[in-house]
Length: 415
Image 1 (cartoon, helix red, strand yellow):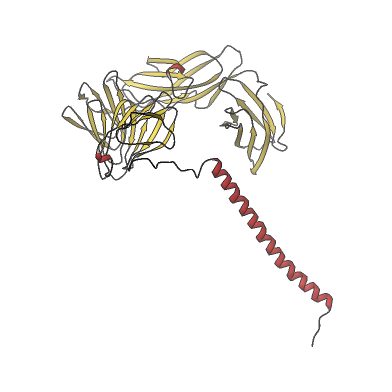
Image 2 (tube, helix red, strand yellow):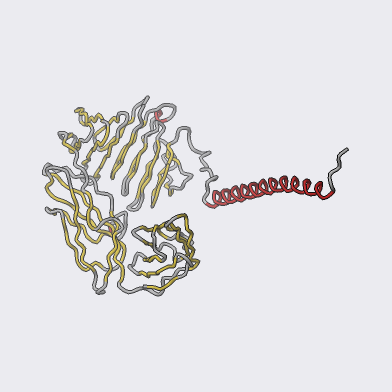
């Protein structure tokens, strides 16, 4: 019988033991990483209410769902005449009236899958008829303001919008916009996709893609080619200007437009993205050129939009608001940042983070992000340099600049 030396037997056992031990360690590491990931995901989900369910136990069957809302949105219940402020638990039932204030918007999904977007300063009534429940028929009335509707690819019922004296049946795969003015008892219908059938005073007309029609005095106008909203050009969205003189800056507004037959333009500049009446600084209609200059704009955050009018009287939709900032020429020492951190993602890509005053705008290399409610922010940049300039500003035009070392996450200097 062959006997190996004691030293060799020990060495073999040691190697085999190390292999098992190494695989065990790898397994433990993987398990720990997995547990950390699960714990972080659970914490993040709980913090941001991923698992919270809207309490709709009292909602009638097939009630319309409020997908999203912002600003002041209210619903008056048909049964109790109680007016409530919309929350994520709120539903919309037959007979209810939805009202948005100057800063309010709401997106509602009906039982047929169609999506209704209620714009600011609007009043919409979900008609009280049994076809809304137990079927696929939808009927709403726009009393005032603006309502955008998008229908699905397949419809097994009717989708009807009442406005002033008109009744409009939407067909499948249709995007339509309805504007009602309670003061003039007039309305407008715009179709950007699909088609609708509108009946006014016994007169029925089909309005198709890229067409416009007005409803006035119980009649529907001849269809026209839909005017597109002008496109803001300057100042571009998120543009920033510096008031180096301290007496305000001069801003040249300009826009482009492809719609034929434009007679004039209407420009608005406001402090609020909702263009609430008390926030509007410029409300100029009748402009015949595609530019407008405004001097003496003080530091702060501004929004502007433009729409066009045709010789026929048709008006386009407002353009999407563009935001621009006017910053003070000098840095504000009251704006500071703590907990600076630089994370290199790879190559020349970095993620910058820190904590400052909630709501401040953080800008670097043309990219920007707003600080959250706790003042924290994260911004991804790409630069081959070892330093980067970051600027903070508030809605009053106060600003502060920092040059940050990407190697040490320390502030090199302020500007």
